[in-house]
Length: 268
Image 1 (cartoon, rainbow, N blue to C red):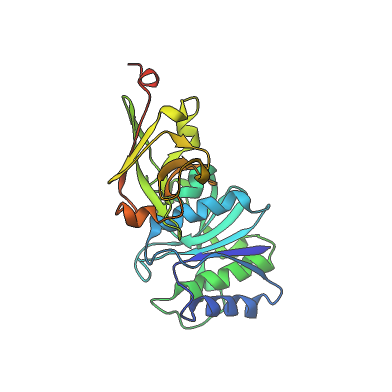
Image 2: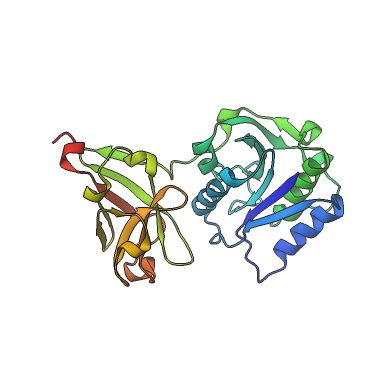
């Protein structure tokens, strides 16, 4: 089974390479694909969003090893979750929240560290010492959790409401989920939230950003102009054609976003 990796480790240190080395040592034939290691440090909401964006594009029965873990060494659990037909190894800190918006969590386990190869356990690098060996175990055993996991109630898995969208009258209220390397701003408003609405009549505001109507693509506006559109992951995004919208409009992850609906859509 292929292991897909997502972390906030970055690429300037040896952390990612060491995690891969541990897995290769335990499962020499393992196949690994990097999703990203550039989640902003300790930013669990962004990690949850990026993980959710990746999951629909992965084939059947994959293993996701995801580590964004500001609570490492604390009381948060180290878990395995079956969601969307895949196995996720990750800290129980809400990192699964985005995937759980797309598919239900079918099973969950707490990792049984006693079955892993015995080694000194670091207080600060569970990605190397727990999650990597556990992922190698699952890969070698065809995704059968077996003795690796102690079953836990699905409802006990931590989920957060970072993806929540509220409608009040003629307004949708949400938050910024992510900012990509181009400075495009991804909001929590999904395409499904605006189905049946006149996209040309909507207005999107965030900080000093304001755009009338949703466009289809960047070339629908002039160079340097702001636009809102439904992006490739089916979330409403804010951009500056050939520019950095987040920098220009001083937008950060978590900032509020307001979508104004046409009067006829609000019942007015």
